[in-house]
Image (tube, rainbow, N blue to C red; front, side, top):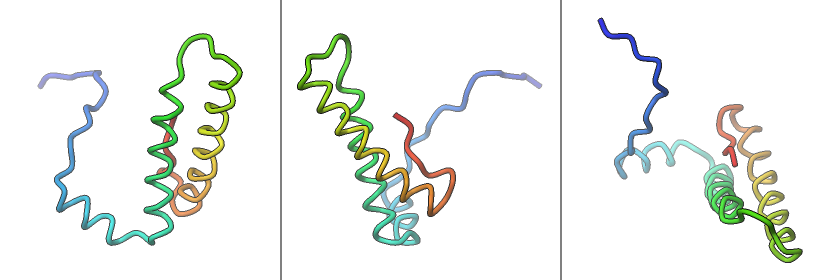
Amino acid sequence: MIASSSPLVPVPIPDHVAALIGSCLPAHVLQAEIEADCAAREVYRFRGPLCAEDRADREHALAALARANKILAKHHPQLPVRP
């Protein structure tokens, strides 16, 4: 037996399985998941020293992520998206 301490590798989910999972969730939770994913990508877009406009855009994305995560956490504690 080989023991490995490596973290789990994410495996892509087939579209049909994702659709089945999505059909079990309320519409507002699915919308919050999409918004959280988009906001997290937006937060990652900003790197390095930021000008005032970029800082404001990043703060706006962080606020959107927090709003979406609040809905996701209310539905299930493990659903929030991490930035």
